[in-house]
Length: 426
Image (cartoon, rainbow, N blue to C red; front, side, top):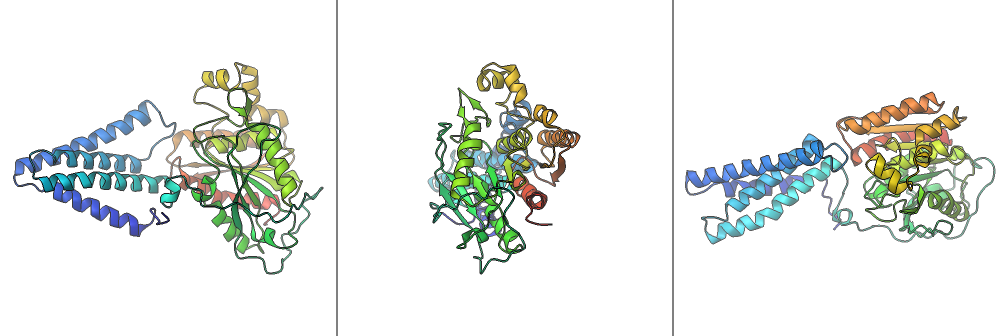
């Protein structure tokens, strides 16, 4: 279950096996039967390409642009299945058996190729949604330090651990009543000692569909911050990945609504109260930031623009322009109870005009080079942020699209600015 399915040893082995199956299925006793197999493969591949074009370019079912690499693997998968089906006819029983066995191999090969392109699953545990983290032992409540950050990144702690600790916690929706799943928390090495300093806090919000653990399993934020901490005396922000969705298929848009529950109150009240009462953290807004992907990135932009009193920075990978359920009419009707004014007030552009000029805010926008839609969104938000007096950066991830490769690029290249804003690095 922990075998790496995103690394060359697995991928090359699987590709070779699939190629051998395909070669066996194409070679037939007569050229006519072989031609039928080749035509079946070509027809299946064409069908796969057509379905990607129809669902992505025409109907835009997924809401994101799929890359040529993903299109290729879908086409190859359909082609392989069509080739296998063609071998069920006018063939010996053992060829039928081989054809039947080859179908899941072709499917797995196509899935593995698409997975690498999206950069999401490391192993089968990730693919099955199994959270690999145990309950976090917080040892004792540490309370909040009021006023200022209360720590110095130049201070060396006595023998901090080499790595931080990741675990799950239950953050109840006391004020909101929001039905949140368990959150995932990262404590950096310096937070694990007997007298930890008050540290910055970084919210980490997954995309939709998704779960809090995604930011660690697919986003690899824990591994990245361990490497960051190793270069900074064990210092890194405490990361809290709460559940802003309430379920993998839900999209409450990080606002309070009758239809989807009080997601905003949960994140800004319940989660914040839990963090400040259980962890030793700063109360300085500059020391609090939000990192998000897709729907989570949109939430990050919403909070950083509307609540500069709570968050000093945002790191947004593939953000929408504002809260949305796919189209404006549905969003207003369902998410904002028909109120166009409430919808307008929730837009980051509105918040930026209201709070401009910002005293001390930073926003980093990231998008994939091959994701034209969200790249346009990122450029628009970046321009609006600069106009509102927000210090802003724009990152375009080369050769990636609306995927976790873009998320990791945004994290790697955007977090240093966030860390400096938090006071963790020059």
